[in-house]
Length: 358
Ligand SMILES: Cc1cc2nc3c(=O)[nH]c(=O)nc-3n(C[C@H](O)[C@H](O)[C@H](O)COP(=O)(O)OP(=O)(O)OC[C@H]3O[C@@H](n4cnc5c(N)ncnc54)[C@H](O)[C@@H]3O)c2cc1C
Image (cartoon, rainbow, N blue to C red; front, top):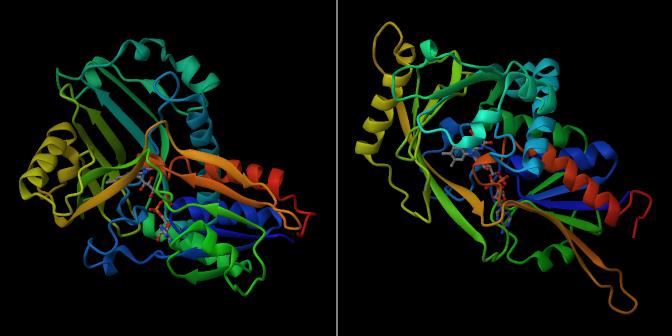
C-alpha cells in the first residue's frame, strides 16, 4: 500500500492519519510535539506553538451565512463522528451536552435562523431559539441552544495517537525543516509516496498569522458550554473539559499578539464576566477554583484554512511528489477535524490511489 507521511500530531494530523489508515494506506506521523497529559506541561513557552493542548475545545456551530458552507459541512461531519466515538469509546474524552449562545448585538444574518432551517437544512440537532426570559440580562438580544460536544483536548489527542499506533501506524518525534526533507527520510515503513502537511502553520505561508488566546482553567464543572458575544467585540465563554480536566473560562482573541505571559487582570475580568453570565458555575462555594492560566496561539490564515493538494511535476525518469496541505485551522481545529480529515483523504486518494504503490 502507498506510504503517506503526516507531518504533525495535533488534532488535524492525528485525525487525518487515522482517516488514511482506515482507508488502507500505510501511514507514519513525523512531529516535533506529541500529545502529553495537560497536567504534565509545566511551561507554555516551549509548547506554545503546538496549539492543540491549549484549545477548549468545543463545537460552536457557525452556519452559513455566518460562516462558510464548506466549514459548516466539515463541522457537521465532525459532529457525527464525535457522536459515534463517544458511544464506542468512553475513554476518548468526548462529552455531549447543550451549547448555549447569547449575543448582545446580533447581525441581520441571525434573523433567518429558524428552528426548522437550523435542524433540518443545516443539520444542527436540538437547535432552539431562546426566549427573552431565558437571557441572563437585558444586554443580550438574541440567544439559542443546541446539542453539541466538548473534548478534553489531551485526553482526546492521546486517544487518537494510541488508536493510530495500535492499528500499525508509526510515530517519529522530530522537526522537519522543509517539506523536501521528508522525501529523503529513512522511515520504518519504507519509501514515502505522499505527504500531508498538518503542521498547524505550514512552511513560510505569508497568509498565516497567530491569534493569541488567554483563558483560565478552573476546577469548577459546568452543565453546558456557554458562549456570549459582547457588543464591544469581546467574548465570554466556558468549555467544560470533563474527565477531571476542569472547565476553560475564556477568552481573548488577539491577532498578531505574540505575548506568552498571561495577565492577572485579564484573568479576573474573564472570570467575573463569565460568573455574571452563568452564575451557576460557581457552585455551592460561590467561587472559582483556579487551576492555571492558559495562553495559546490559534494558527489563523487569511482566506481560511488551506486544505489543498500541491503536486510537483515529475522530472524526467522520476515520479511526481504529492503534498496535501491541511493547516491554518485557526480557532476551529477540533470542530472541523473529521471533515478536514475526510477532505485530506479524498485529495490523497485522487493523487496517490491505493493501488498505486509508486
Ligand atoms: C485558547 C484557545 C481556545 C480554542 N478553543 C477551541 C475550541 O473550542 N474548538 C476548536 O475547535 N478549536 C479551538 N481552538 C483551536 C484549536 O486548538 C486549533 O485549531 C487546533 O489545535 C489546531 O490543530 P493543528 O493540528 O492544526 O495544529 P497544532 O495543534 O499546532 O499541531 C501541529 C503539529 O505539527 C507539528 N509541527 C509543526 N511544525 C513542525 C515541523 N516543522 N516539523 C515537525 N512537526 C511540526 C507540531 O509539533 C504539532 O505536532 C482553540 C485554540 C486556543 C488557543
